[in-house]
Length: 638
Image (cartoon, rainbow, N blue to C red; front, side):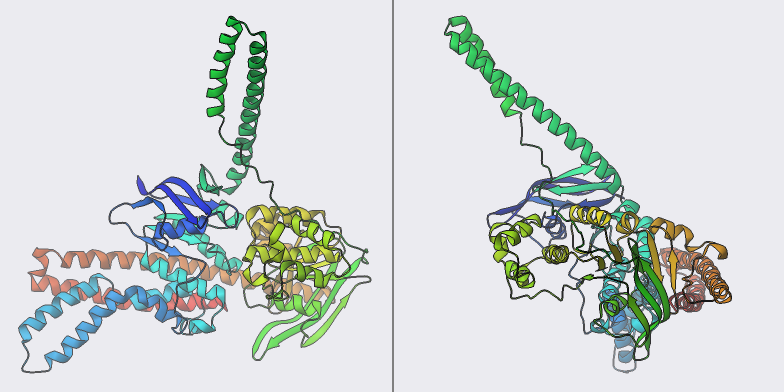
């Protein structure tokens, strides 16, 4: 059954048309991925659906009584509030009921007030308060925040002191508590670590409502979606499958359309030649034949349609190195780094050889970016030893784009770093990265996130280094540019050490994954799928970096890792049992609260008393269960 109709939506910004006659029917339970180039209009369409942006033409029709929730890239949160205070805004109506109840309690202490009227109002408010789970909403909200990955102490921190990923989780928690019928998510995996993304995937798989997702995370789209909508040239095209299906089907459709278009063009040319030949005879019969062919030609041209859209405008990325490095590229021994009392990592060891494509993964805040900056020489380690191999030249890509001068033009930014190149050489290079014509005179502060990424990638390419340190290189890039970057890295003749949460990228590009933990780096000799397979492997299959360690040390580390993973597995099983118990008890409370609304019940004081007593006992049990649940979740996060 359709829950949302998008009818002939048109939207322009000045002379530029972003959306031109968009029509979609969204069914209940659909999980749809929206893909397309940066600037194609995906976010504008989402804003029009939510009503935060006005369309020029067309209408959005939402099924009566249904609600929409929207997680945008620009989070709607108040930085001065704590994470807990922010999510509790969802329960504003419950808070108002509670405040009124407290006010009535004060008024009842005044002997001059109308007690009968106040007690009647108090009773109705209490029933409504209980029906809306007023007694358990605070513990439930806190449980959701912790379930999404916030630590106990972070729940009561002001949002201005939290990271981007933590703020995203807070905004997401608000949406989950609202439980909308249609959930719109714009790049929900940005700033989330792999564990956070996995939690979100599991939640969305079980979500009963309709989900619309804009994402460049192809792995995420494959796991979640059952349909794909491509936004292209102002219009939309639907595909009945996930991202991988979309890629194959789009290629098939395009090939078929190009073939049909070319056949029509050949037929048009043939008809034009026949018309010209018939008219050259200049006889009555041949003129009639020419006129007949002209009618056929007119019908064919009217039905020809536009030339099929292809993606010719893709950045042409390629990396090569000026010199070849030695076989040993990087050696790290007993490296440690801390900030105050916060230890990022301690006594880690690793080695990278020439030609390896290594990914560094780990929880947010573990120090992955810091490690790359230590290797680059930008930050000093607290202790330990780093050695670069012979002829190793580092090229560094910063996800924060801090090395770009915002007041410079695009051309000056590149020219200042490569002064020996001619204007023609630089403009040709910039054109290959889609900076054409007057685009090269844009100031960097006016560029989009994707354009800044492309500019930094161009600078990295022109350096021709042999050891690439890449910190989240696919962030802000559209899907097609990501694919171009991946192909370029696969063809690179040097060595790559990359931080990425893009699992599709990790599957396609890397040959080894290193998981950074506080006291070690654990190596997995394969791509992301291999890492997932081996994550819960037996003790003998766990690979610990053995550089500088005795056999006894390695065996102890393997045993310790196996014991820790077994412990976490047991805790997760217990959490699952507790969550089932919570669901059962909350379901029973809901049933009892419905009973209280029945006339034959609320007119019977004894039945009301018994039901309220059972509700109270269940809620007391729930509070204890929630407390135990939160402590178990904290153990996993430690």
